[in-house]
Amino acid sequence: HRAYDKSFKQFKKALQIKPGFVEAMINFGSACRHLNRLSEAYEWLERVCSLNPDIPEAQINLAQVCLSMGLHDDADAHFARVCEMRPQDQRFFSERLYSLNFSERYTQPEIFQQSLNWGKNLIETVEPVGHVKNRVHQDRLRIGYVSADFRTHSCAYYFEPLLMAHHHDEVEI
Figure (tube, rainbow, N blue to C red):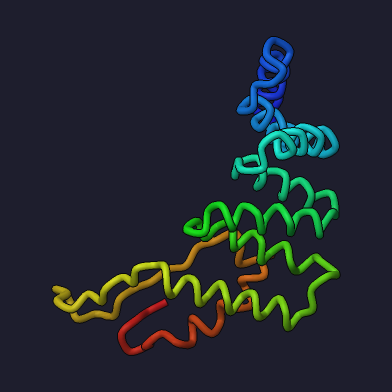
């Protein structure tokens, strides 16, 4: 927390000197979010988004603040906005899908459909990695999956079919 405490103080000072400094407002809001000062974070990030709704960094930070505050519909609106602005950045789609699980506005089938839509988008936009054909050793390819999200993120529920779909005679997990 020390780095965020220091950042908080520095950005607060910068905003006293230049109150309309947008980057400082975004960073101050982000520091507030990381220090769990959610009301302050919301206030500053909402101000930035009101002044200019086309700044993805402000939208994603505000979406995360709204999610932490239990403002699920607002979080979804901001996640959706940043997904429109940066359709090539898959992490925003991932965060939006995660947030939909907390919303009362969406049913489980609707959330599942959103997951399928995201998967279809991935297939259409991400270049596949080619299969390695001329490996020196004929041993199976060893693959390890590491993610903090396997424990609590909704993607963990969709991961088992991926593991089952591997050609186990060619791949060791």
